[in-house]
Figure 1 (cartoon, rainbow, N blue to C red):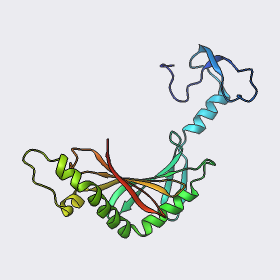
Figure 2 (figure 1 turned 120 degrees about the vertical axis):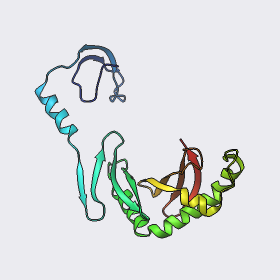
Figure 3 (figure 1 turned 60 degrees about the vertical axis):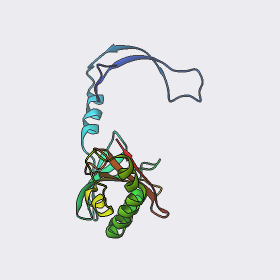
Figure 4 (figure 1 turned 120 degrees about the horizontal axis):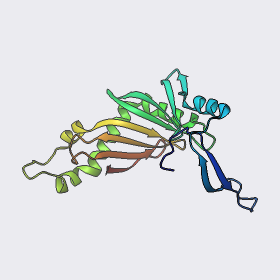
Length: 193
C-alpha cells in the first residue's frame, strides 16, 4: 500500500462479507499488479484530476478540493487576504455555507471588531500571564489586536464558523482560532498548532 499514489490503477483480489447489510466494505486479499493499464479507468482518473471551478458573482471563482470535500477561494477580510473554505453538507451542497459566508463578509467590519474584542477578552490575560518572553513587557489590548492577521475562514453548512489568525508571535507562532455560529455569535477562542 505504501507504493500506491492517488489515481494509480491496480488489480486486486478482495473478499466481500456474507452479510448483505454491509455491502460497502471488502477485505483486501492481495494486490495482483500495480500500474495496470485500463483505458476506461485511465479516462476516469484523468477526469478526476481536472480542477472543478464554479463561477460566482460574489466570490468570483470557487475551487473544489476533493481531498476534503470543500470549496475554496481567496477573500479580503477587513483589508487582509485570507483563504475561505466552504464545507459541503451530506448532500455535497455548499449553498448554505456560501450563504452564511456572504452574510459575514458583507458585514466584515462589524464581525472583525467583535472577533478582535472577543479574542482580547479570552486570550490577552493568557498571553500576559503565561506567554511572555523573559524581557517582554505586558501586551496591551491594542497591541494584541494589531498583531492578529486573519489567515483563513472556514464556514460550515450549519452556520458554524472558524477564523484562524496568524498570532504575530504573541503565542510563539501558534494560530489564534475563533469559533462561533452565524446566529449565536462568538463562543470560543483558543490557540492551536
